Every structure is written in C-alpha cells, then in structure tokens.
Image 1 (cartoon, chains in turn purple, blue):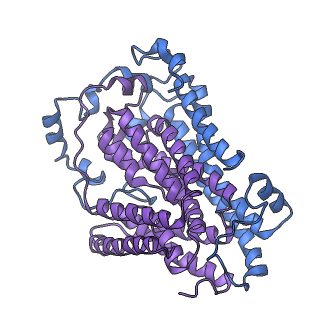
Image 2 (cartoon, helix red, strand yellow; image 1 turned 60 degrees about the vertical axis):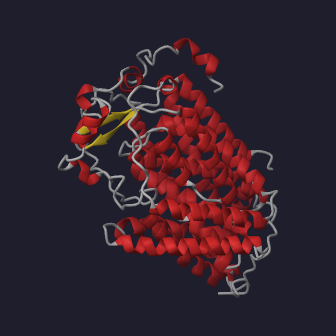
Image 3 (tube, helix red, strand yellow; image 1 turned 180 degrees about the vertical axis):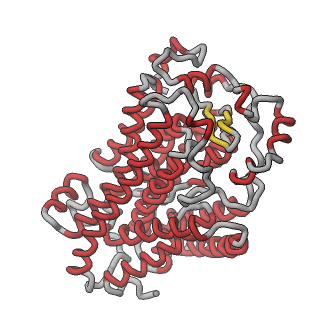
Length: 284
Length: 217
C-alpha cells in the first residue's frame, strides 16, 4: 500500500471503492458518516494529497446525506424550517471554511482533522445527556415558527424549540468544520439541535442529515473552482461509501454491533493520532 | 435576519392568515396540543415518567441512553411505518402541505443520487478503458485541468464526450441535488405564502449558487 502513488489508475479506483465501502459501513455503524474515515484512508493509505482527499470525501458526504434524507424526509421527522434557518449559518460557515482551507498549510488541516476525529470518537462513546424538555415557548423560536411535531405510534407529538442564537452559532462552526475538512460534521449539528435547541433526538438526527448535504454542496462549489474535485478519485469513493452505508443500515442493526463499535472507536483514536503525528511532523 | 422589516408587523403572535396550513400556524401560537400526548402537555416530570413505559411506543424510537448510535446515516435506521394514523387524518392536507412537499423532496433526492451515479459510472467505464493502465499519481496536488473546475467547462467537456468530464458531470449532478432540494423548498414556501421562509430559503439558495457558479475563490 505504501506504493499507492505508483499503481495503475484502474487498480487504485477499485481498491479505493473497496475501502470506501468499509468506510460507509463503519460510518453507518457509528452514526458518524463515512466522510470522517475517507480522508485518513486516502491520505494515510493511498498517499493522496489531502486536498484531493477532502474533495472526494465531500462528494461522498452529499451522496450519503441525500440518500438517507430521501428515506427520512418522507417519514415526517425532519423539521424543514429549523433546517432551512440553520442552513443560513452552515452554508456561510462552509463557504468560509472551504475558503480558509485554501490558505492554510495541509499540515494544519491534518492536525485539525485529527482533533475533530478524536472529539468524534469521544462523542460516539458517550450518550448525550437527556436535554431538558422545553416547557415554555421561546419568543424568538415562536416568531420564527420553529416548533413542530413528529410522528409516534400514538400519533403526532409536538415539541418546542429554544435558544435559536446558540444553535445558529454552533451551526456556523459545524459548517466551517465541514468546509475545512470535507466532512459532514453531523456530530456538531446534532449537538446544536438536540442539546442547545431542545429538539427531540430523532428530529435532530434527521434534520441534521438533511442539512449535511446542503452544507457540503456549499463547500463543493469552492472546491470545484480550486481544482480539489478529481473525478477519478471522487467517483469510487462516492459509490463505495453509498453502498457501504446502504449495506450498513441493513446488516449492522441490533445489539451485536456494540463490540464492533467499541473496536472501531479504538481504531478511530489510532487514526486520529496518526493524522496528528503526520500533521505535526510535516508528513502531510 | 435580513427579513426583519418585512415580517415585523406580524411579530406579536405566530398566527398567520389562512393561506398557511393550519398545522403550522397552530404550532407557533398555541403551545401544546392537549390530545397529542406531548411531553410539554403536562408538567414536565410526570409527563416524562409516564411516557417511558409505553409498551410499543418506546420500542421503535431509539432511546438516548441506549447504546445505539445516533442514526446519522443509513436509510433503514429505525423508522416508524409510514402509515401514521395521525398523519392521514390531519386536516392540514392541501396541495402544498408540508407533508406533500416532503414526499416530493424525498423522491427528488433519491432520483438525483441515482442519476448522478449512473452518469458518473458511464464516464468511468470509458475513463478506465482509456486511462486505466496509467500510473496513478495523486500524491502531489496540481489542481485538476482547466475546464474540469467550472460548471460551464464540465458541461462543455461532457458534451464533447470526454470521459473524465462525464464523471465530473455526474459529480456535479450530485452536488446539484441538495441545491435542487433547497430550490424546491423555496417554491413550496412561495406557494404557502410564507414570506419569512421564502426569504430565508432564497438566502440559502443564493449562497449555494454563488459558491457553485460564482467567480471562484
């Protein structure tokens, strides 16, 4: 594998697609999405420049998000108003992040990536604390008509939304991370909606999923003009991650995956440390 | 928000004039629905306590404290069967109800991803046939060739049947999918006469188009 730069293009595309299927599976397993594995895989294993890796990862993020959102949206969990309002923050953040990515060294990006990966691994092991139920209607949220409801087996259940500015700010950060690193940053998005704004967990995750694609599309434009989108690299990644996510959603359900997830968390920490090391030593 | 002035007159209450589906107007002004069995309906602690043991209710919605990961990706994550009794009897129906719009959006997203994958894969077949044996060298970043880095250039190259450009066109179709989704939401908000969200959505769409079609950075 260390000769990744030397193999024929066709072979590289095939190996990349195989790796991307694994990344998609792991993404579905942990709920982190495939993007966060793709960049380390391409840079550490295939020795691809991190800018191409970020471009390819971002494209796969859009495929995963749109594919999954297609299923979720019909079920009525997604809060379109919350999503759209917060997308103002994520798209602004994403364009800014993608812009900054062109002006910082690849080592800095690798270090930031390692840190975000560590944080995500940490988050994945810790269930979020139960966010207090919003009891009184928040004025700003009411004015923006953000309150909603979602289906349960007993019928629709309504919920109230609060702390819109805090959620908006966190979303801008999520967007910037997404644009800078080519990942979906769903972890931060869910934190913003679930913990800060008090949306029910299921609504947060599905709305986050819907937003990830839009956020990624915002950075994708910048990446396109910068020449980060290399079709021969991005295509196998996109197809592979999507296939892996589909497969993962089908086979990786149930409690048996708990051990797998724990193992994978260790792997993520190792990858994060290697990204940090490579970044700090100038290897990337 | 930039829509401040336009919306200010309506600010005191969330009540909207008739064109807005009853569903939305209600959500804003009227706090909890008594019949919805909502957590907010009764004073918090007791509402929550009697909500948990619900025999079939808790089973499908992932509980926060469970070891299950958040279903951020994955299509088949626990989803309640699509025939929600409450949904079908909702009087808020209407041609442009949120539910209908969401159903169309779901279809749009799915078709976009599939179309993108097909176009890009066709390009890939020809690309591999022609260049598959060449040595891959993506270790050094050189930015993709001119023409492959703009929407107009990609379309032109794809029309000239250049394989790498056809793949890129597929990727652009994929990027366009969430953008089309936002455009679709914009139309829906216009038809719902929801001025505030027309402005919000137009702003998002503008940012997306600026990024994709803009002068570059």
